[in-house]
Length: 197
Image 1: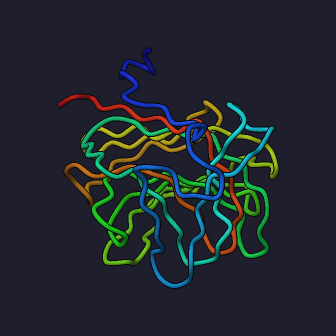
Image 2: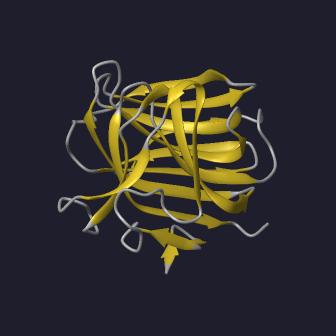
Image 3: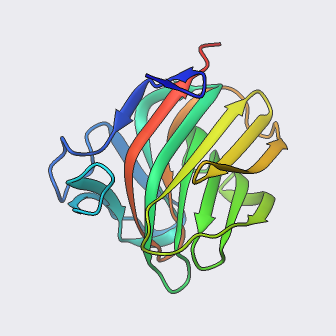
């Protein structure tokens, strides 16, 4: 299976994992303060039912990464549904994740109707770019990031919104998903590939 010229290394729909648990091979935590709660849950609306990965805790920036992945150049893509949240209603992906305080993140926000690109260094999130985009709540969306060297492309629902150069975080790192504050967000069909450089 090919995805825009890059081979899909893996696709995870979380259907082989037991509801109420963290998916096998994943690690979760929070950048900043609070408590994340990432669990597999049944959701018949999922693009590949029956299971999703859902974050229902509250923290500065909850994250969940796939352990034992190490990608320098490639892509990461996920389908997500922003469900609830008074402070925020966001879903994102992370890449070149070194640890809970150092990684890139791209996210879409249903309360703000925008897509944004950040790098997190030393536990502090730094904005690279914001772009207005329609992100209706309680609807499944796709979020994809393609990264090669310093070049980063962010696509929401197959439309390119951000293309930037940034070299703040280099080298290989893990990939995963991300939320903010009190966002309750469901994720499905997580996939990633490497350029093989």
